[in-house]
Length: 185
Image (cartoon, rainbow, N blue to C red; front, top):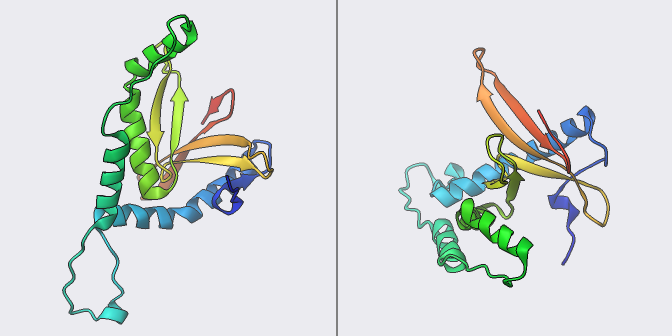
């Protein structure tokens, strides 16, 4: 596997407000590209008015959506069958967890976003009202992982980003930061 740190969010190995600010700025710098890729998938293509003239009619053949849909259908069209040895108690418990949370549909969403954006994230968490873990897929427009600048590519923290417009019409970001042990807001 070839390591390409230019596509990762690289920060210092400690979590503090400055590290979060640096990671958030890097994540925001990737957002125009992710919006463009998502728009291409939806069939919203940008046409340069200067190069083509404003009065030309254009029809979009949305190959981006077609390629993604065919790839995801090929890879995830049939629900996978997970098996383990009968005496493997831990393996049996994992299979039961997969069934309980419909892991296949999470993997389907991961495959689709991986095809659209080139990366995606899965958050495995413990819901407050349940005693079994759950997982969700998060696209890179709403989540990122920050890595230490080393060859091991150790993750320092992951962030889920929610935004809303407040009463003053300002965009407010709420960051949920996850490290290996804790979650904080």
